[in-house]
Amino acid sequence: MSKLVILALIIMLMISCSIDYGETVESEEIGTNIPDTIIDNFSYTSVDNGNTVFRISAGTAENYSIKKETVLTGVVFREYKPDGEIISEGKSEKGVIYTESDNAELTGSILIYSTINETEISADYLYWNDSEKTLSGSTNGYVKMIRDSGTEISGSGFSGDIQTRVFTFERDVNGLYHYEED
Image (tube, rainbow, N blue to C red; front, side, top):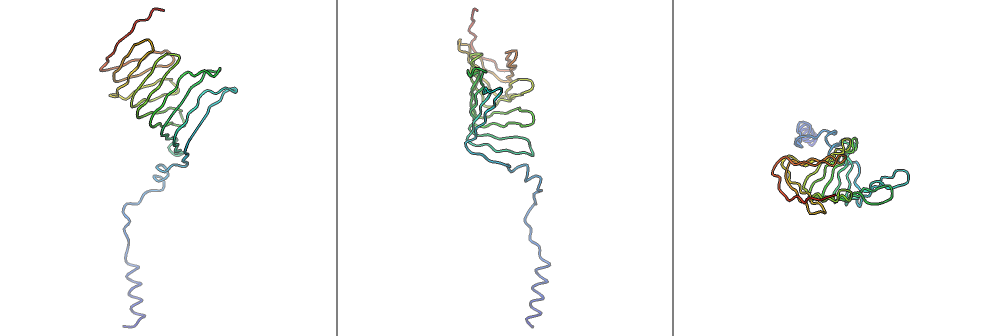
């Protein structure tokens, strides 16, 4: 066989072969699962009329513009009164902020303290609804509230309205209520 025939056979074999790379991933799917921006040692401060209103920091912040969410790890936050006094502060292992609504999910070793309510809340999952100003736990998630007065209440099916200061548990409620005279 001549070199020209062998070369032609090799070219025909190469053209007829295909390489299977497995399932292809749509470019849109890649776009939703890969962050647009990753920031280490993230810090954000919200200011209104020259006063700090809210400050949040995290070890890492990943922004996903298509999903309209920011995923934070190692979250620490503080909310302030106009005079600079801390209203509440907290931390969690992870947080997701839904940038279109300002709603947020916190997960993993959550600890929040409200100086106004003199109450500490601990949980493994909490959801903040910004427009309704409500905080809720997962259906079966365990939430514990401890007041400075000595009251301790825990249970599952937690929800709380921050404006009315009404907090409820649906199941497995346990604790000690310390009566305070005002």
